[in-house]
Image 1 (cartoon, helix red, strand yellow):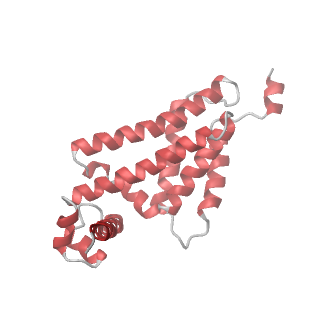
Image 2 (cartoon, rainbow, N blue to C red):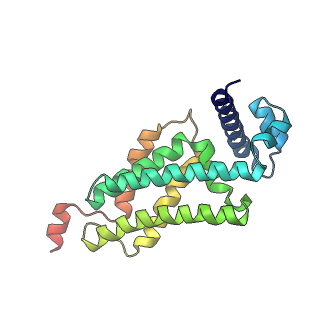
Image 3 (cartoon, helix red, strand yellow):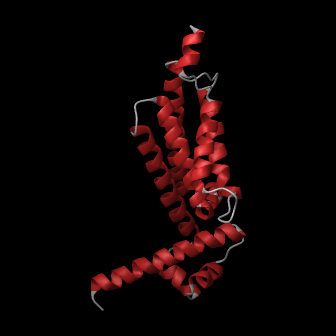
Length: 207
């Protein structure tokens, strides 16, 4: 077998195992899932897990790393999409919430199994989370400084908005009443209310 084809098959196998691990962790929890469960979900033998991944914890770390990288990218893209704090926050929350709905299975694992990571991996993922928190907090701080937002604590408001978005992954179901885009739009409007977003008219009347 050519080397390139062998590498491609190995990558596909790793991806299958990673997907199976995500589904198993979401259903049973990290500690309630065995490598045998993961292998069975992927349609492989238990030995295949250790051929492609060092441990069950490494699978969790891979899921967490990929998941947080995707969220960090969409948060930065939303901030870069405009110079206006209102538009930035609206785009950020819309993308953040829609992502947690579309990827609800893996997002539950990524957000609620942090304590199962080893110390080194957990520290890395927590640094990613601080970066996400910093990005949204700075948007709210800029809006508050310019008079666009009216909130006594940008930091606390950022935590509240992120918590609401993350929790979508806990309860969202594909056959539910709302689509990811509908939730993104609703939460975006809700976030603007939470920061006390002030229109041009309200700012003028306050002067």
